[in-house]
Image (cartoon, rainbow, N blue to C red; front, side, top):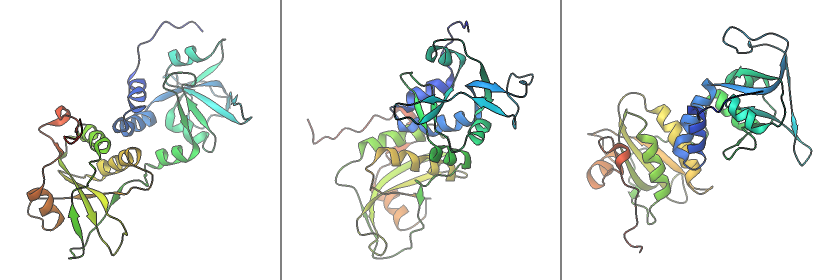
Length: 265
């Protein structure tokens, strides 16, 4: 298989960025499902005019054996990535990612094995990708109660804030974001972080992405709530709008500087 060097494509760029910055992972996951992927193997039906294997084709995919004896299906983002990973010519197929994941659901996949930014794709993660659901985003409807207290966290969650800032800068419908620490003793033993969002249109998709980013940038047991706020609202919204400053503002966008703790030298 003689292939000239190909430049890094957008999916590969996002894979590289997502390896170290959780804010890029939602965009990577979205593009991954929309992209064609390359696998080693053969299909009963010939590829269509676009070079893709038709959905529903019977596939004979090559599995690689891991050190523990289990098997994994190698998957590649480009012919270049495939060429860099194998030592001899192999038959290969180009398949839409969503169709491939549905056909192989339940098996372990690995994206670009052997590369610096390879990624394991486990069945649970693929099920979540295919369903478009996330268990990490929590938008609570908080009743107005004198028992609820809100303030600022003693320890500023710089990693969370920096990653959310990067994420929100990708979404034009997010106008501002605020940080607080809330305690509702009727539901929680300990206070937890809460993010207030101002914006236009449907913000649920952004909240789903923000929940995934929060999951990746906080401790395992830490809870982060999200609430949509508007001018004129009382209670929590009033606190955010009148007593705090936004950590993200659309007018700043990605130009906002990462937080540095002034108490540390």
